[in-house]
Length: 95
Image 1: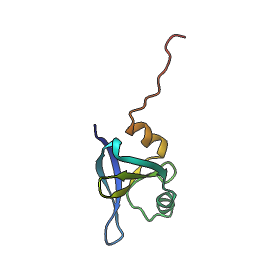
Image 2 (image 1 turned 60 degrees about the vertical axis):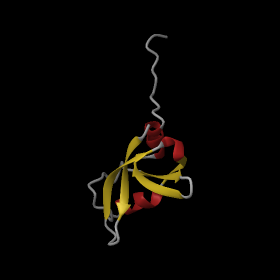
Image 3 (image 1 turned 90 degrees about the vertical axis):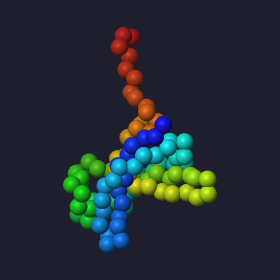
Image 4 (image 1 turned 180 degrees about the vertical axis):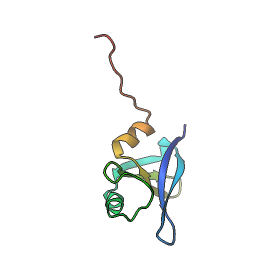
């Protein structure tokens, strides 16, 4: 099952854009916070309409058969992990 995430990409001119990407959770090696993108957002270098105070970014390392790639997606690592592995907070209705 593929999971849809919002990826941030930089073009050759240094401009950033948001795109939708679908990832296979079985190919993910690790997930980590990207503080550099958060800093760029706070400095006003990312003109994407994202909230400077609440937006975080996550690096996702994907392992393929012959190579590995790294994606930068919008969201903090905990939220991305929940979305990727479809974890939901289960609540006990009657204890």
